[in-house]
Length: 209
Image (spheres, rainbow, N blue to C red):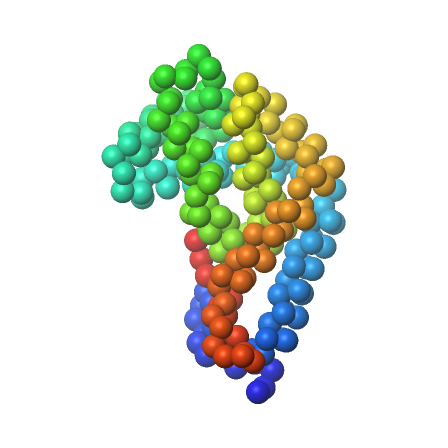
């Protein structure tokens, strides 16, 4: 067999047939590149840290709108109201919205939203969206994957998302999570490939959220 065979080529993805040996080499190269890109980052820039909550809140809102569930329709309405009440022209979600939702004083008012947020963070939707977003650099995708678990861990605290930005930056600077959260990309590659026979593998590169 040749090194590879292109079976299908589109703007956003390529379907290739390669030997198992070549696929494992290719997979190793991707993981190595992403690891190096992460290790070159001196912690997390302030700019990136501030993009975390708006990114996840926006995806949360999209997920609530697109999921066919009556309770999520209510959640979508509440989220839209939070945006509409903002004084800024951009009307973007921010960390203060997340703090408001999880403030113990608002436990009843935002009960459905909190339950939906937890389900969203555990969903395949947000992981697929990050992994397949070709507009985001591999290193940034890894940082967003790291952020998912940090967002989930915050749910166990008495005051979720209090001082979130400083805690996230500290966790990343100390390299607490990188090896563990590079793993999802390896799993994604494994799930994306199709075993054709004993000696070759078909897999897809690319895709979009």
